[in-house]
Each structure stands twice: as structure tokens, then as C-alpha cells.
Length: 447
Image (cartoon, rainbow, N blue to C red; front, top):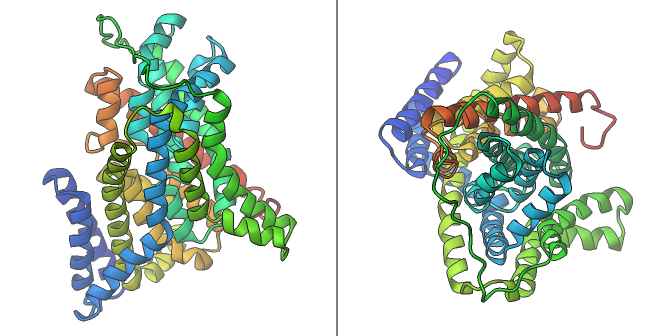
């Protein structure tokens, strides 16, 4: 097998070819990642008989931790959206913040909603608020687009149980409950800086091409009862509370029956399964669609996410098997680049190049996660730095770019200024929050 600098050469060539496959030749990321995983294994001189086993093991090991959870998470989000819980949560938070601070309220709404609901769906669901809020408040619609988009994408990349952060926590060996807690702590300032403050700034400087047609509002479905705010928030928080209860019980009641109980119900798969079952039962009066249609949509969406996640893990497994990790450690020691900054940069480069934050987080954590002990850094801090790198620099090769462009009614230039740059600022803010947390290493739990 190759060693030393040649490993880096092969790795860089593999990344460049991966970029070409996805960006230029429009190959589906799952196919591209799988092809590159096998090709890289062969190029580094791995024995041919070992190649299939390494690739498939990397694929399977990644999905062992998050495969079931991804499927359950998509179904859960589908039920919240169909029941009207998402809109109810948004309305309550906006009312709480008031008219003048409504962009901040929308940014925080995005952060909350994107915990169980994937970015694209959440943006489409909440985009109806954009023009009505701009009309009622006199604040530029551009500000609201920035606030909503950055709030959603920050949470999507920083707070489990969305797939990216879940895989990062799994690959770095971080405690999931604490990872969620610190992810929230980092996501809030990132959302406010990149979504609210930058949104107010850019809204005063960019004149959007506002559609003059009367806004099309979502008509209430007469076949559906209106869900309460309490139930909406209760369903949203249920899986988070169960997972956090697992972590708290370990600290407060170690070795007791209480700890054993919460260790079971607070397991990430069981917690979300309980939440899905609760949604099926308690949200039924508020859902007009057929359950079979909701399941089919959710499973269709989850399928490709699972495949891409597994393929990213397979590519990372090949890289780790090659010994490039040891070489990177030696190289980084000579670079004098802080580990957390390096993790951010690596993730950010993949995010911008591949157009998928999930692929960026999976690939970066697959490579750097196993090196946590050698790097001498907290798994939580390393994982959060990787997640921060996945927030910004969304380009036209990212489906989210076009969701914001279309439903925000922006031009390409406006989308770059609002969405791409705003996300980058949010990512830097999240990284700054990670560094602030690092100052309390050894004091706060898990750090």
C-alpha cells in the first residue's frame, strides 16, 4: 500500500474527481461516493480481496448508528408538517418576539423547526410567512428570507437528530445528549448573527424583486382540526427530552433502575420510535391526508439520505484504512493549525464543493472522528467544529440553494448574498461559539 505524501496525492485526486462527478457530470452523490470509495481503495494499493469488505463494512457501520434513526426522523417530521404543528410552533414563536423583533423570532423558529423537519421541507412550509411578515412589519422581505434560511440550516447542521449531526456524534464517539445540548448552545448565537443581524443588514442594502401578485396563502383544510400550541411543542420536544433524560440520568442516578429505564427509552432509536408512535396516535385528529401517503413520501425521502450517508461512511472507511489519518496527524503537527479550525476548514471545503452538508459532515467525521484520542481534543468540540463547517458556502450545486432562490423569490446574485454569505457568517459564528466552549474544557461535562 502507498504511504506518506503519496497517500495525500491520491486522496486529493479522489476528492477532485468526486467534485467532477457530482458538480460537472451531475452524477448522483450516492453513485459518485461509492465509485470513489472503491477507486480510492484500489489506487492506494489495498489488496483487491479486501476492498469489497472495507467498503461495505464502512457503509454498514455508518448505518448501524443512524440508519433506523434517519427513517424514523423523516416520518416524524412528515407527521408534524401534515398536522399543522410546524405552522403552530412558528406562529407562537413569532407572537412571543413581537413585530419589531419578528426576524429574530423567525430565525429562532427556523432553528427549532429544523430539529425534526428537514431543511427543504421546512423552508417550503414556512416560506408562506415571508411576504406576509414583510407586509405587516415594513421590514424587507430579504431580511426574513435570510432569517428563516439561516435559522433552518444552522439547526440542520448543529443539532441532532438531523442526520448530519447524528453521524458526526456517532463517528466522534460523543455522548449524544451532551452533543445536542452544546449544539443548541452554539446554534443560537450563530442563528442570531448570521440570520438576524446579517439579515437586517442585508435587507437594508439589497432591493429584492418583489412579486406584485397577491400572495397565495395556504387555505386551512376543513377536514382537519386545528392543533393546539401545547401539543405542537410537546410533540416537537418529546424525542429531545427523552434523549437528554438518558444523559441526565447517567449523571444523577448511575447504576440505578431509573438510569436503566432512561437508558432504554432515551436511546436515540427508541426515543424517536416512541415519538413516531405518539405522533401516529395523538396527531391523527389533525391530519387530513392518508397515512399511507405520508409514509410513502417519508420513506422515499429517507431512502436517498440513507444511501448517501452510508456511501460517505464507506469513503471515510477507505481513507482511514489507508493510514492517511496517521500521516495527517504528523502533517498537522507541522502546520501549527488548531485542530478545531482544521476540522472546520475541511468540512467547509467539502460543503462548498459537493453541495451537500450531510456528505461533508459524514466524510469529515469519518476521517477525523477515529483520530480523536490522538488529536487530544474533546469529541464534542471536534464534532461541533465539523458541524459548523457544514453550515455555510451553499452554492448552486446544493438543492437548498434553489429552494431558497425559488421560494424566497430571489435572483441568483441575491441568493448568493443572502443565503451563501449569510450561511458562511453563521458558520464562523458557530465556530467562535465552539472556541468559547473550549475555554471551559474540564469544567463543563463532556468537554
